[in-house]
Length: 200
Image 1 (cartoon, rainbow, N blue to C red):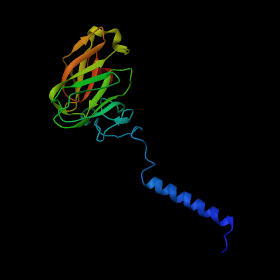
Image 2: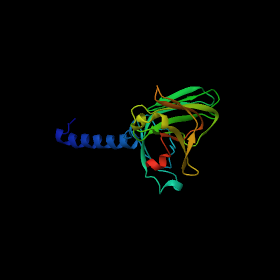
Image 3: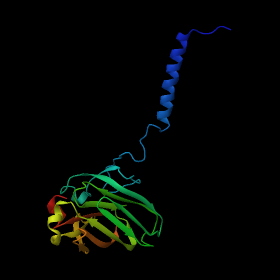
Image 4: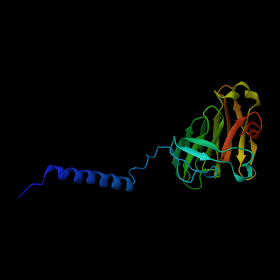
């Protein structure tokens, strides 16, 4: 039996390495980890669960597209909740407490913010109506609004009208938080006036 010279084995090894890399790439191993940033250009809604730390590019609804620019939202919390489950999801400036029966169906609850220094957040899935009110707490500690606590109100962005609506809540001046009962998951902001006038 005659052995082939070593010079013929190197091209075969190189070909084997190249084919292996192609097979790995085609099998999906080249995709990022579930915690890698992901981007989408949908209208302030996440179609797939966003992992904590994910980046989601969102733009305002068509009715407000002229008034506000597109924002880049960062996922700070993401958690699956079963239908009817009582649980708390928190991340960044936000905490939302669901009572038993709040969710009519299982869903991935997400909390996103576009800038950790401001009080503008999205709680999703955007537009989900709750069967029972959940308790939303938004902190304004460390934000530019901290100097005017008695003037602060909680606002909810109404996608249908493209406007902000005041949400009745309680301002805890000591804790620097505003807490309210909410029945819809969407964009919320703490502001001294209509957030649209602040460029939001």
